[in-house]
Amino acid sequence: MTGYIAGALGVAVAITFALRALPFAVRSRLRQSALLDSIGKWMPLGAVVILAMYALSSIDVLGSGHGIPQIAGVAATVGVHLWRRNAALSIVAGTVVCVVLQNWVV
Image 1 (tube, rainbow, N blue to C red):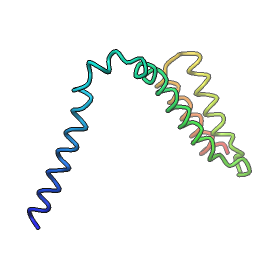
Image 2: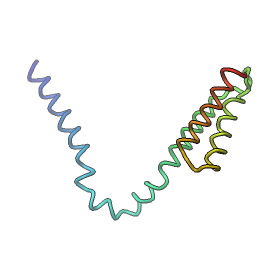
Image 3: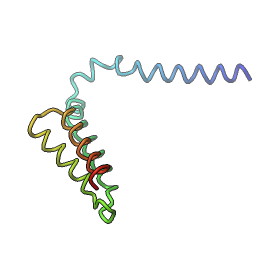
């Protein structure tokens, strides 16, 4: 039994180490990759769009607030980002607007 656990643990450690070390081993090849450069430019935007669509898809427009706090939060986030071009400030502003409207107004 102990040998089985030690073997399983050894395999898990080896796989984890290999997966962590692999990007450093192939770094020189990846540095010249146009595909990886393109993914690096578009992936953050894609992740934000997917998260925003997921969050907005759960809005209950037939509920008491009719989705106004969430939509106002998104509008505040976009407005502050266009105004200041600061992602952290935009996220905080949109969150504050949404939470305030959700808890104290609607």
